[in-house]
Length: 254
Image (cartoon, rainbow, N blue to C red; front, side, top):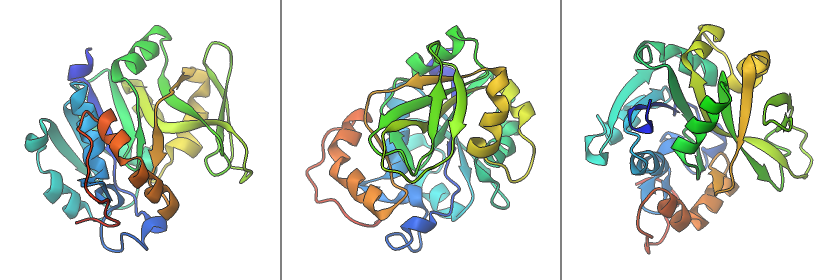
């Protein structure tokens, strides 16, 4: 399978409670970074790499996301929606989208509130070379305390996930981008379940590999992180294949 035919699951159904002071009535993926909704930057990044088959796992304020992006045509992509009837967590959202994934042997999953500069084809190539069940993009950060960390061996196989410590120390963290074999869905039960806390640890014996990335990484989970994303707006636009923007960065969606 080429990256151009790959399906991508974007997890955009969260409540965004820590960003409510900035986005009291809009879903977090619609927060503007520069002049664009954050989620549009992710979609542009994928389209720039010829990845155009997208599934948006929506939930909280799903109507707003569906109105904003529609079928994806204006952005050069095809968007299908998997709207959760209730909060299902990251794993539950992927499982709920299973009917839209039945024709693909592997697929990409991305968190809708973080941006990682990465090459889709490189990630796929590593996943296939290792014959992995799942491959996780990881990055080194200076302060890993609020993320939890990943431990891998010399071959790149992940051996352990460590819980958040709150300590201001460097570490290797999950960057929220994954390649999954279709078989992963057999290991995800229906209902409320977390990829990070439940599914990945259970898959370690099946072969989960880390793909270390060196580009820009940012999430917008807190007001401080969102402010940092604004400062990095031009770099994010460049990574998404867009021209720099000279407009003043807003602090809320339009």
